Image (cartoon, rainbow, N blue to C red; front, top):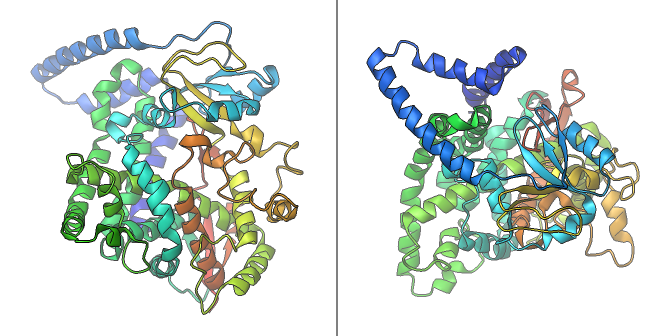
Length: 533
């Protein structure tokens, strides 16, 4: 599966991007190239009809856009560069306007960036004023991608019910993990090369899928492939659509998002029989609390969690399908990225492996991890947090779309519709917070937790103003406990069963900033892996 996805999807997209990039085409030139290719050979009559229909669509959208576009408030500093990413823009903004917000504009997005001192102030803004879901919905064309459409019932099921079920699931999830590693990596007795990003992506996808949809569907290669392709299709569509002139996006959106729509149809087809069976079991059960009780065997009763929270009229197969597709999307790419970077750091710091294995030997009994939230693995926890500090999902945190006017302690009053964020990179790489902030120190947070009063601080999943990776406040990442559980189980399995090194030709690893402020892991990295047994 890895080679198929890499050959048929990822590589053609990279070739297309690399082929067009040297031309340095503007958005309009790129759009003319794509549209011209699509219209080549079309009969004249059809072309005239299409142009007339397109003119009507453009006129309607233009009028609508002019009535809703957001005006930059006076008094707000602007740092604008025709760059494909935010890294240099943010660095310049920090130097020019220290301690003040500024509008950061690249060739795709416009975000208002606040300094770290505003972290606590922004995290306290309620969702109806500044929405994290609204940010993800707006920047990922949520009407097409469905990103940012999570219901309150889904979020509560993740925060409360899913988290509460995890300690009882550790042994079962270890078994799911072993199945995934056996499927994807196997047991090579000699060094074998793997594309590390796609390898971790497939492993995390299968581990999580077995928990949510059960092992039969969770190990089905069609389901695993569909979950893996979902973020890839969406990323390609968003990238292409952002390259279009604004006026043409309504016309191009259904074309660019068609692979996403088709993939969603495939996931719906595979999910529906499973969810109908779950619903039947739930409604026929005499004791529904027994179904919802945390248990070690079987899959997580996530359908039951959702049904117990939805009103009867809302609990439809269609709604459950939407929830499962969202939870599969939300739980996979970021966790796979975190595992990718953890394995990279393990390869670059082989001495860490022996330290972490010794800790596992002290905790594991007969090959089994404890049935807890795995906080006993303190050095592994520190290792993961340090990796997450150096390799976060993005350079921003607390991204919000304003739903109402907002006036913070610094800067002017901001109108609804604007995107705000905090400079997370300034927190993660702050020399005031972290000695040698650009160096990897696996025991950095382990040592901090040894100090009196810090026992409950500096965990991997901690949310605070010095830990921007998960967000904070009522809109912090609801699945961070589940993600942490997956990562610790997967890393423990890897440490006990494999050795790893990075192919020398791939060093140093490249981490590419993207236009929306996120980081792209080095998808060209090749790992050499061998079995320890």
